[in-house]
Length: 480
Image 1 (tube, one colour):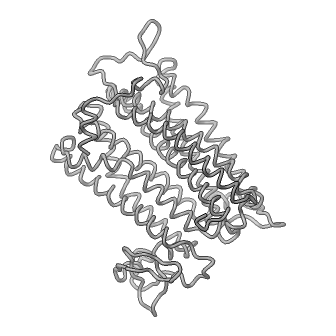
Image 2: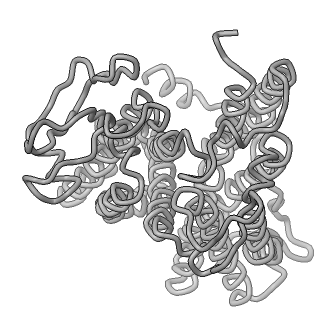
Image 3: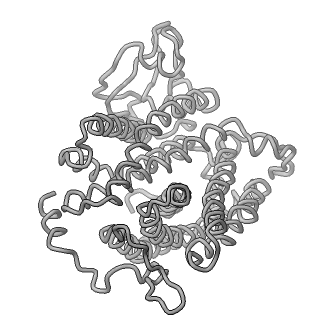
């Protein structure tokens, strides 16, 4: 069917499940740190706006965290079911790294998550804040181990091969492999930026529908400060990451650039747009800027960038895909920087919360961080092909011996179950976002206690039972 084989379906299934999964940890990482900042600011300033925002976003965090855990379980099982040869070859490295994540990050998160979500009136303020901070640290530790494992697959070091299996010889070299620091910083920063635009988009939604209060304004203000500061930092990290990739995975860079061959001693141009054709071995309709490719990738005007024709055809990544996925990521990155700069200009003019064009842009930029993360992930993983462990094991040699029919059935089941389960979860999370934070306008909120009316701490009790939208919700939906 469509010229696909069992291996292709296994790759599609893994890409599908990990694309769903990566969205939840990205928001979890950003929201956990955001909650820690909110609670810390409330404890320091006693401004109830921070407390209201904490309770609002903690419900969304809980739903997102749960979906992230469920979707993450599938990834571990797939290593054994669909990629058993890879597990047999490299399991002595990837297995311990994932175990370290469970023993450190997962246990840390599990130990303090209950206190964070349900202990607001049951423990002291200091202990509750400590629990929130520990959950935030746990999400970053989880990122550390996951990226260590994946980065080792990109730039493997600290091992030897004995009887067709990888044997670790230097765990520090394995963990801190050449690409790991750049990929860790790039992913963690991406999570913060994605969360900032998620929060900012939520605030823009409420401001556009006429719900203007200190909590909504604080959401937008904090989100835009994060975008203004972190988005340019992400661009700098991306530049260093690109230089590292050029050194260790030059074929990936050549595919990203759609660069097929060098001409004499000429500097490499930057191809802004075009259509890399893998069969014809050229980039059609190329729009080039002379010298800029060399300037960006080698920081010089005379050095050349490796070209795809310098590598055997069987060792070339699919340039058609990574060329465009990379440009989607970079294009969204520039839009994020522009949004942050625009917010600063409006803030100085005291129109940040009233400029409807800006609010509409912020609203539509809500999913931009997550889309950029997916585009970057596709660039990284497809750009590594045809290797599952770069230079050591090909993807074609890593899959289990399943039939086309078996992979077709499981892929269809995954698609149906994922869209049903996580579609419902995402829909519910958006209902929570549309409700907005509850503010008390100076009155001490009543979050429970003996003999007191309380708002249930369970996230599933936080949304309206009928899920109805207000008339202004419908009006805004029709307007956009």
